[in-house]
Length: 449
Image 1 (spheres, rainbow, N blue to C red):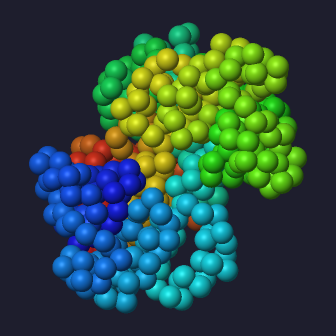
Image 2: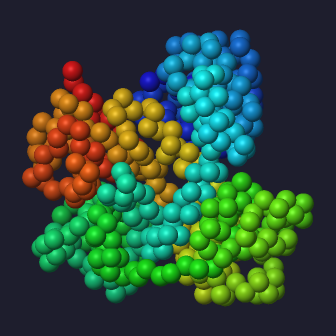
Image 3: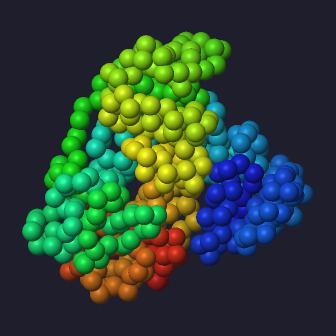
């Protein structure tokens, strides 16, 4: 696919690097000449220095032959204008990244759709929704639901003493004949494993598991985890992520929100209905103690500084908070953050990639989730009539080795994938895949007609 990405934001650069490694022809347009030189030195990207709102620059990028334009500047208004111009100049599909909540109302979306922008994506809104979802599923480090919760993908860190420790997948399947879940990935010491029958679980493994709703409690039990109730939530950072998370959570929880900027704190006090807004620095231990951090059930740190988010979550852990969530924008920090005990990491670049990557597939993708803990993606495909995946049972499919089928949703019912199961046209199929397998998996679900 011919893809044009504009902007020099972290989201734009991550998407350009990710998509260029998946057999796409990617062009990156950005104003920063020195940055583009560095990118060209280690990638196959075609780069163009210039202003993406310039018609001549877009023409130089051959926008009329472009199948997908992703505008991802830090300024949402630049993205809107770029996408509008690109569509007018012949681009087939245009996506604009926006940060400002006022652009995301249904009325605004409708108007921009009429003008030619196919989709608006907000990394902050995606991150805020993910936080709210995590606080309703307290024992999981990550969770993603497919088709009305018929199947879910959960990330569970295996604790010492968990019943599955030291056992192979084959042994577990034999011991528990009616399992309602299936492990699709094990992340261990910076390495991701697609598990086979002889792989053994170890302490501190990060296991991604596809599960049916009735299998969640058994899954958590085998992983050494317990659900717990959340009533009190503390949020650090009143930016777009923190404010939107607070607005969502205050309906069901008692929420306190810290922001270090007095003007922003006053603004949030007027915007939020029942959240207690505190103007102060959450790195101040005395302030945390005075605001009863030890009585919190969940602590969410979403400032613009990853180090602050990591530090304050560690402080919260020290005071006994059960669930900590940190916004970590430096991908290199993710592994370290998890190893020191932070329960869940949110990354806006990966969250945005989750939303956008479906538009680069030729097969019908219902939903996607770019996973934080591993360099991988989980897809929900709609199996097309005549596609290779419907020709044989799962065991006999020539499925890419770096991918695995976790479950199938058929007739509004979720099923865990088994080797003797045959996928039928119209099934929704949950697939875990490493980047090298994306193209091969896509072909398996595409109709041959």
